[in-house]
Length: 256
Ligand code: NDP
Ligand code: 8X3
Image (cartoon, rainbow, N blue to C red):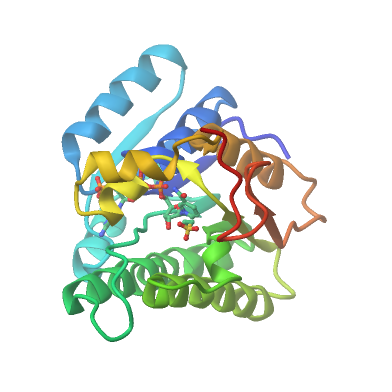
């Protein structure tokens, strides 16, 4: 599959894995629809990528938790961007490491509303248009947390287990169409993820990556591009990827 002139929608494109995917698809000549809440980050990325590559870019400042805003933004897409070939459901977060008996309720709401409902809202709006054209590819960014629960991660792990179930069900719902569903499940990736998880505590976030060579956004983008460039009759269903120093969600070799 060639990606030149394909329209790719990336949620959570203002940072980390989503931002790296934006650049990776830009290199391939795809046109981009970049969605996130931080408008200035999106504008900066749009300027940077459109100066570097000859592609079209449309930005959407939206919160994936708000179905009505999403619907309006997608209904009002400029003509050139109306046919979305690839949807990267990447927007997501972990908030806090509270346990099942003491976690902050607001943290739980935010993770469930973003990681599960947000992904569903975007999918529910975009997939019917893919079905009309009998063409498309949905890439959901899950996590190793979707395979392995750990202490302090009950709800984050729960949301990523949900993403796995949703990806698998979607593949069954779409069986018989030409629409592919892929889930990429990373282990530790050095992005803004830990800073967000620890409510902006950068020092604490940095300790997560101390003494290790983690994955970077570019490593995940590479794999997304691989999945999206297989021939149409090949569907990569899932890829679990960790840095070499990480054996599972909680076994990490640190060299300090
Ligand atoms: P970042 O925090 O760097 O990026 C998260 C992105 O999601 C940002 O662009 C943010 O944009 C966007 N986002 C968050 N909430 C919303 C919302 N309500 N509406 C719209 N956009 C939103 O983290 P990562 O790049 O690491 O995370 C991307 C995905 O990868 C997530 O789903 C995460 O769970 C998953 N993941 C991350 C791993 C890691 O170790 N980093 C490992 C496994 C999976 P903005 O704030 O501008 O809205
Ligand atoms: C992020 C990876 O291990 O922090 O999804 O849950 S982990």
